[in-house]
Image 1 (cartoon, rainbow, N blue to C red):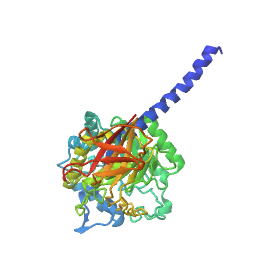
Image 2: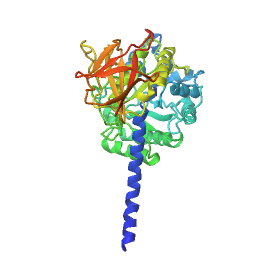
Image 3: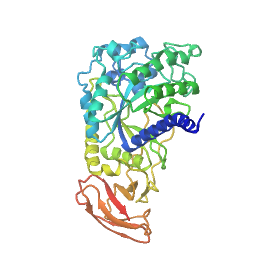
Image 4: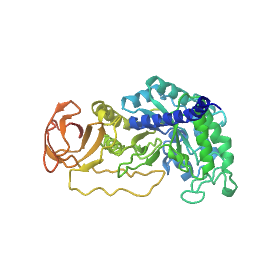
Length: 459
């Protein structure tokens, strides 16, 4: 073999590897720059709305498990599922207006009911409900038109419709359908994977255009070989599709933090998924949602530590976003319109933030419960969170009422060129002292939203 032919052979072998590596890095970088997405939990549980046979249910959207409802009874919810308010265009436009860059839609939750037109399982919204439409097809089209990335949630290691899905959390059979299928030891997970999971993933990745991410949930007893096979299937069908770490066995592209915040910077890709109310799916008894300020505090904190916020809404059985979501969505629209520069396309700074008060930090909840759990902080201690982009650092002041305060993390050795209030681009008074960066700033107006951004440009 001559020398030129040898070089050509080597290049032919390595170029695809390099291209695939670059594509993967490109998609990860895009994901990390987007910062903010909408999670949508919508299914038969939305029709029940937290009530079963005239009584409030336990377990939120997991009530089939908590109430041990036979599959034949639970499936009757489909007979009345005919959402007149469903409008994919409105969903996507609302997300976009609120500053969200991507949407993750539940295609199959733990109840096993497919919220799209699945050819391999008749247990789906098109074949079992009077609605008879494929909402995912309409959602995918709306996302393409609005330039919103579409991700798909899929419950992996739990499926209460299928007879072959054993579980092991928090103990053996702890999340299994043992009332319809009592023989836990007779369940063969591989049969479920081959009969339902792989065919449905193939449908989702071939019939709805480009998919940004497959958002798996609850891997449970999925083996390493099964995780590897699923990843290979996804990569074959859509090489640019990201996969979260709940594919199991350490094979995901990014990690998930659920219903809590991080306590440090993590420069690996990660995402925090949080609810606006108590539940993931719509529950009519869940009437108190997080305040707009609280949710924007969470977004700022997550981004300062290197993560994305995936904020959940559970549409009603009629297909509408609950009215309680409107104040928060409007607040995100207004705040990000003025301050989005400090969020999108940014990276963590050398520290994520500092407190401006001697008040004791809130002791956060520990542990985890997968039905109703909220480990996010409720206190609003005055503090600063930092993000950065090149030579610019954004100091995001949260609930800081003082007109004169010092940011100790920015010492006098850091040469500053200019500081402006990001929301109106006006310069503010500042000085550097031995203690740090002193800010002299009276933000006029008591009705001002209590989170603002100082844009600090360094020389």
